[in-house]
Image 1 (tube, protein in one colour):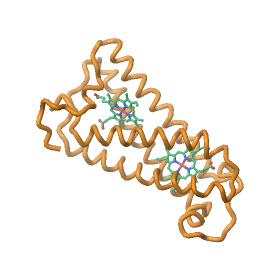
Image 2 (cartoon, rainbow, N blue to C red):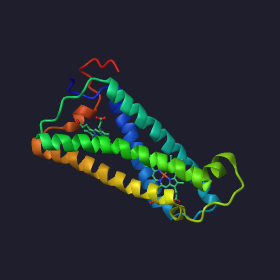
Image 3 (tube, rainbow, N blue to C red):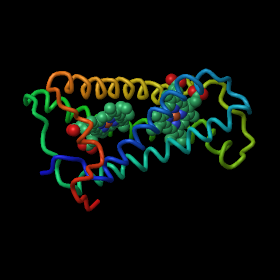
Image 4 (cartoon, rainbow, N blue to C red):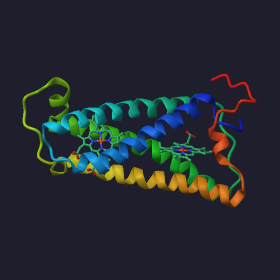
Length: 179
Ligand code: HEM
Ligand code: HEM
């Protein structure tokens, strides 16, 4: 047991978290409101590349988590402790599902081949006409909900216990972290 997340968990949490917030907001606000034409291809390319990097980082975080010392449980009741754990697990699972549905959407609709290999096929009129497009969209809404719960949980824990939880998710300079 340790009191803090290790250095790689901390760095990857913030890089991963920032990238997810970026891709979620640009996907929801920009991409889904753009008409499907040639001008959209560059934005789609960036979205798909970032999405794939997010998937790789998610797998890295899960492996790093499994190989590292467990972080001591928070001083909350058993029910709340479970809720926090399930929230974290759900975030990992849903991020993976979002990325996989995105990859299947890109493959099924042909947009992946158009963007990366210059295939000369017609772009789908609206990705929401496509089953996997709807799945990708719904999963991103579930992810937004889980992240809102996550951030609200961190803030409410701070208000209730007057303890700054962010210290556990920050690089601890007093201890020699091996990772
Ligand atoms: C910007 C707002 C965010 C804040 C303030 C924040 C804060 C934290 C804190 C303090 C912890 C450690 C909890 C503990 O001590 O047990 C944590 C863990 C975690 N956060 Fe965040 N976070 C944020 C954004 C995100 C985002 C966008 C994601 C989505 C990927 C995320 C996913 C996670 C996960 C999965 C864990 C569990 C780590 C593990 O045990 O593997 N966080 N977060
Ligand atoms: C895990 C990271 C990802 C996140 C957070 C994410 C998020 C989003 C969001 C929020 C939208 C808009 C959904 C809507 O209209 O309601 C979207 C659309 C889309 N995403 Fe992703 N995505 C991710 C990964 C991927 C990947 C890996 C690919 C493909 C390789 C991909 C391909 C697409 C496509 C083709 C669209 C349709 C764009 C449109 O509606 O015009 N996504 N994504």
